[in-house]
Image 1 (cartoon, helix red, strand yellow):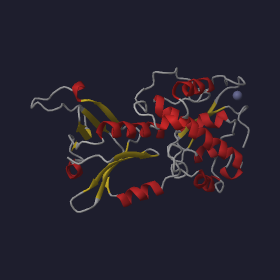
Image 2 (cartoon, rainbow, N blue to C red):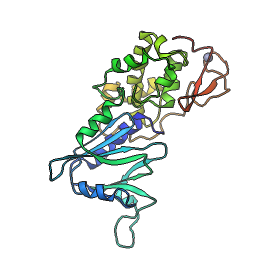
Image 3 (cartoon, rainbow, N blue to C red):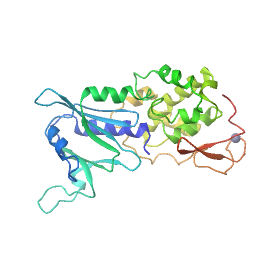
Image 4 (tube, rainbow, N blue to C red):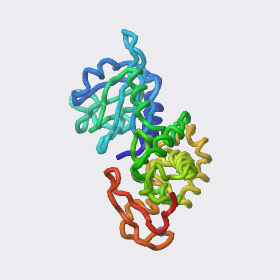
Length: 297
Ligand SMILES: [Zn+2]
């Protein structure tokens, strides 16, 4: 499943390619046709993300209702942005459609095709507010309040590994960041939230605020210290990256070798102590950790 940094980068990309001119909005597959017609020909005012949720704001319709397309990719969804010139023409001279495209945006030489989302619906601003309110703070958002997450974590008997994956506690963090951040700070993943030290939570949050923008910028999850350092050297501080036009999410996965401390390294030796990396299903996904290194709470 795409983690929050992927959706954040996608929002940036959609904003850059489709913000401004009127956008042709269609549903070649038909399942979103009625809703698409309501925003077709409107301007895309903003593309934003909160955790793994994407919102495309198209402004008010004739009756004064503000319209947002709300997308959640789920496990298998994809939203691919490409130049129209890279698509073949169909028999009628229009742009060809490949597969079941739920939603297509087209404007200014670019096309974006949404396939297989978990969710694609038209909602109003109030409903956007409700979705966002149901999510925990997103470390990629400048308005995020980590104390909101801490209030839930510190009162919970569930493990910190489980809580980090709960989107109502913390938005946008998926399995890779969960495993890697817990290792980076040597935190025992099965510690109940109520027994996690406040300083540990502050460390986790600060680390996510540092690491996620690098994920956005490079289109890959970077957690190894040498790679993180090199990434910083290449693009500057996370603060600068977040505002860097033309870089966010455009460089997909080609910069660094795929390397993690614990993620998907079951039974391999820990890179720090040599112990066997363990795995166990926590919150529906495989948690990976080193029981010898990760003892802090
Ligand atoms: Zn270890």
